[in-house]
Amino acid sequence: FLAWKARPESMAGYYPRIASPPMSDPSSTTELIYHTWPHVFFRHKFNFVLTKASFLHARYLEMYTSPSFPQSIKDYVDEHMNCEDVAMSLLVANY
Image (cartoon, rainbow, N blue to C red; front, side):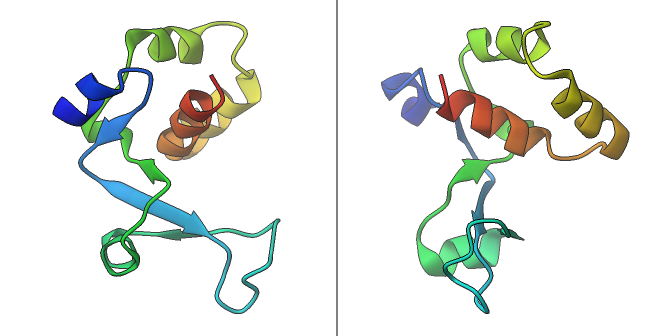
């Protein structure tokens, strides 16, 4: 909570994750591999957090549920019951 209070325009949380190119093609810009805690721990870096235990400004929730947020993203999240963490992280990173 204190990390978020220091930067309330960001998203802070307890379950860090990293998406990075595969080791077989580290220069790939089209394929990403989703890594969980062990990779985060050993690499000492992450690029998003799971939304189930995160803090973020209420305006991001308003944006996510607004008609201006791409419906195709919401449909994908609803259909797969997954990837809301990626969608929210991209939204926060771009506003």
